[in-house]
Length: 149
Image 1 (cartoon, rainbow, N blue to C red):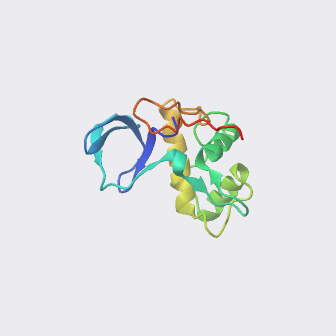
Image 2 (image 1 turned 180 degrees about the horizontal axis):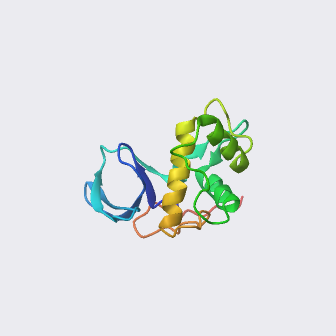
Image 3 (image 1 turned 90 degrees about the vertical axis):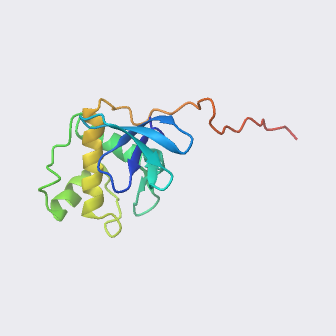
């Protein structure tokens, strides 16, 4: 799931990777429209597996943050209205999810986007944020075996 859910810069929401074309990806919106469209190499496309949140120590993978949010909300949509909440309210709420987040580098807009993405994933029925992807045919997989010395 992690590698097949994508964020595309300049386009709202999240997208699911359906297939790969010669010069593009075919994606489907995870919102109610389920609109399919091509995404090109010129688009800034990011897999959710490649995103992390800043903390006071190490960066925490987005999937771990989403899992904490799911635990806090007991698998339901977020209890805070991220569109109307103030920056202080968002920071207070997010501190319950990730207590040691870096308050200087994680902005209110980041928290809003995280909550929006979480709600989209929950509405789409995607709740297993820790599920590991198995390599598929055509993926670059390192098949070399380590040799004993």
